[in-house]
Image 1: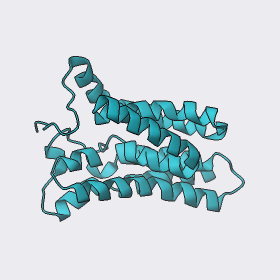
Image 2: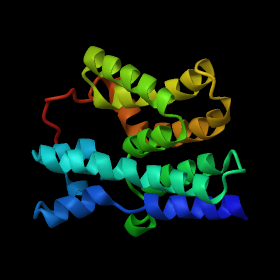
Image 3: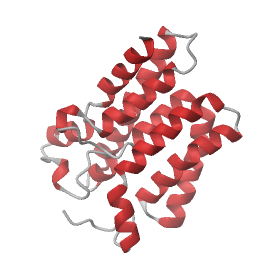
Image 4: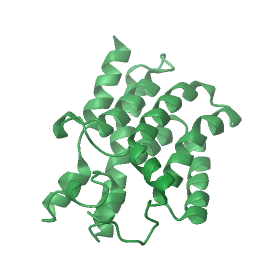
Length: 198
């Protein structure tokens, strides 16, 4: 029952579409009508408002951090309950019921979940993300490489307990990037700084 509650709590918090809320509050309309159609920070950045994009990153990460931390406080003796809450939060972000079970790509929430589950792994993956972004100049590539690397890094740094949730999170994020993968294969994925057609 504890695991069910943790999953529901994570999903409920993760489902809050902060990117859409912030852009609408700023009078920018529906962020889903531009760029990739996502509600995540990368698409919010395409509105030209860096502050809103930064706020979206922080809020999308926080909505994964909170359920993991709360689950750990409520059930300190259940080692995997935080991982269940983390997967729930990322799933809630990607498949929010408030938007017809469509949402963001899940990377910021995945980063927040990893921060709460094993911060040394998150720091290492942040370096992987930065290096990949510098080399490729493509946001989706750095995101996908980072989430795929996370379970491997967790194993290497001695955090085997977080590998199962990280595998589940990586699967969700990769599914959400399927359109990006298609554009990469066609050579059409935009690089950082390039304009993206609506």
